[in-house]
Length: 114
Length: 112
Image (tube, rainbow over all chains, first blue to last red; front, side, top):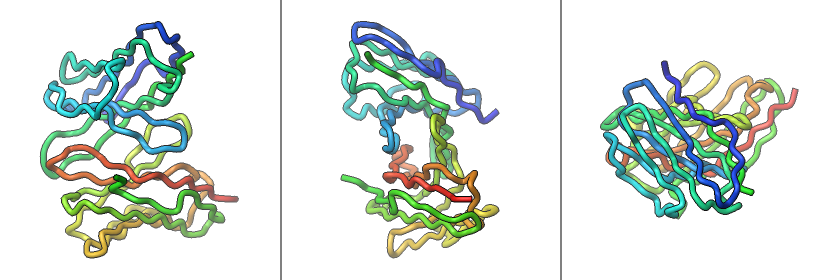
């Protein structure tokens, strides 16, 4: 199973809403990532979890709050977002360590903030 | 600072032709260079990857050429097909960083 599953596929939320994006993988990967991708742009790294601990936060606003409950799950909690936060949010996973950094991406959650 | 520069931004190729996408990097610590293919509304999918100890890697119609001294690598798609129409991203990472730095992307259109 080389699949990273993201839910929901689409999400429309108001600026005062609280919502969560979910990501799951069962490949035994101990590194998990959140990326944000705007139209016609490459994915931009937001957060990296390594062995369930936050290892990289790329200066993301606090209205985005990641959580890694266990080695298979990754959540992104959203609160008080702005319309410019509308984007495709991608989850990815990979092995941690040398010589094996192939990353698998999920299909993404298309987020629209109204 | 854009650490991986990709060109061209868009590319139109006739069916059966060769598609060539180029990338250049700056960080000499990079030691893993994957190419990702992304269809609209989907996540990126790994296409092929290379490490700097080889100069070329071929998988089916897809070939990566790597020039370590020039800090450049390229993707060649032989016998391009309309189904290859997608956005292609080169990327780079180092084992120490365990994170990908993406190029800007190339939108490929293969005309029937």
